[in-house]
Length: 287
Image (cartoon, rainbow, N blue to C red; front, side, top):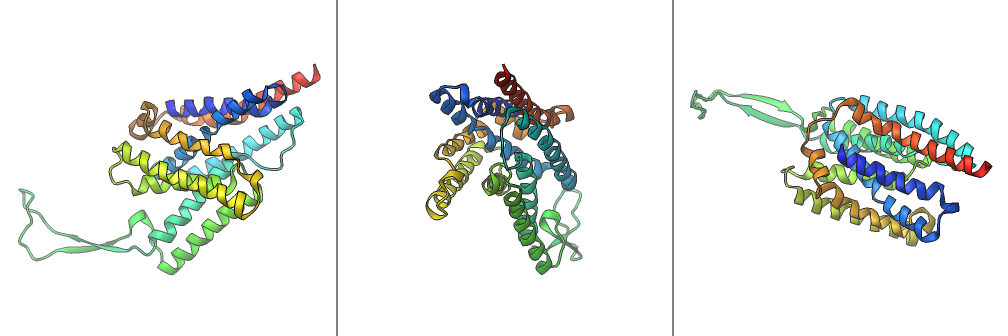
């Protein structure tokens, strides 16, 4: 919960810079916005961790989608008050799409991985019994049991639909946001020893660095769209150290599950703090 609080404070600083840019000195504006780059990867990490731990993926997805819709209504009303015109949608739509993308990846990579396990009786001492009889059971890693061709087809379709959704909705961080969540997912699932934070840190640092540099090259030099990805977004790489090298990160990874009101409080804080900032902007404008 402490890590979420840190991320929420960083996000608030970022949004103060965004909504009050008219009244802030350039240096202070840039400072606020630069600090704010650290917030998004922390939230993206939480989504990847939530996917890994949830026992009800559909509930998780629908909850995110529901909060995304409610938040969009509140944020748009706030933007109307502050006379801010945006064509995109909020970050929760990106996070919901990320769940769809990871689900598609799981179908794609696990649907063909049927395995056969051998069960043998043991003696009371725990040693193998010399009884030649044994039992075989079929199981599928990742709890995915589909015909391989169908699983791969559905997996690819889910990944494409997820990316198409963020493009169509113009949700915050777009494809880059989905891939950030996915990068953390790959790190968490590839690490056999979760308690080795140094391994998680190094893998995440490599993944997030490659993603940011790759995105920068793609937008600036391949697509010729420099406005879609700022150089100072590279500062988001530093968030990896906050996630995996602090006591807050350790509590998140190994601590007990927080109470429901604590988990959902951030969903409420996200649109409400934006609305309040917009309301202050409105009051300043009319005075």
